Length: 306
Image (cartoon, rainbow, N blue to C red; front, side):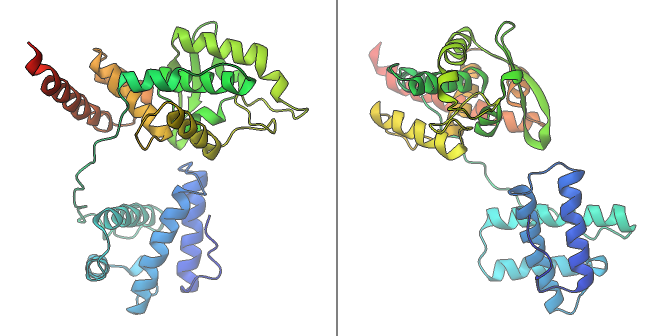
């Protein structure tokens, strides 16, 4: 969460921005270190610019003032993706002001430009199998195997994976409970292979990794504490390097691969949406484009072999 007190804004705008930050955290349940800070930073720059034009209250902003700010961004060569994000921040902010202070929302006529979505990078099934083919020697190998099998089996986000506690997983009934964006809860089924390796890791190897540190988190680091996003990222980078997978692999690529491989094998889009925890099916539909591209690649590769 950003510190508002020292911002170069009027007292009224500082108070409004402080209240808005708390609203995002307590009512909208946004992450204060990522989403809330990003919104607040966008709005600080927005209000700072308008105050330079002698508009010292967010409650007095007009549609023409917003257009002036957008022209300022364009004149200073801001990237389209950055401008789109700022427009989202501005629209959410003015919607909040209109509801709380009963003022007219000057952003209702504002239309965000469309950014062409880049297709997500995915691993092939062969590459995924290589990544999962871990030589199991140490407790950490069994931990890594359980994590990767679970992610590929369920499509969890890395933030959801590392937050899992023992009470969140039901290996007898084969499902995991996780909390996605906005702390929205969902239940996701787990495949049999993932269940087997989770049982092996939890029942045989996790205890010896605790090192007298009590935690209910499932996946632990070498200090006996909860593994971090950075720690998981380094693990999969290391495994990919050892397996000669020549892609810039990321934790989210496992989630993309899970969805794409499911779709290629006949799963329906609505089921994938529910498993991924997407609020809107349009987000899930991007995987149809990935699948079509994969089919085209396979056709181009094999069409000359008949």
